[in-house]
Image (cartoon, rainbow, N blue to C red):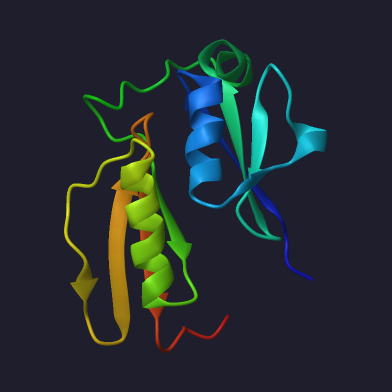
Length: 134
């Protein structure tokens, strides 16, 4: 049985963040979404909790990272194909995201990335041979 992972991300504009991820083809989970935050379903195992800054501060005594100055997190998502990698990056750019690199083809792995409107880095990759689980 696989375990679910819920990733909490601080966001400056909650509605803009939800719209961004919906533009990438992900859906908000209605049971876990409301005015104080929302849950974006990436797949059966991974969900992203979008938390407005004031709500996020309730989870930690530390300051929220200024992603214009520092890297907070790099999230990597395995995709089913090279085309999915390219489609997601293109959708992210169209929806207000950015990128700082070009696609990279290593033969066994194809990757590209985007940065969402809140500065969180997302690496997307497709591997032809996936490592076996330990």
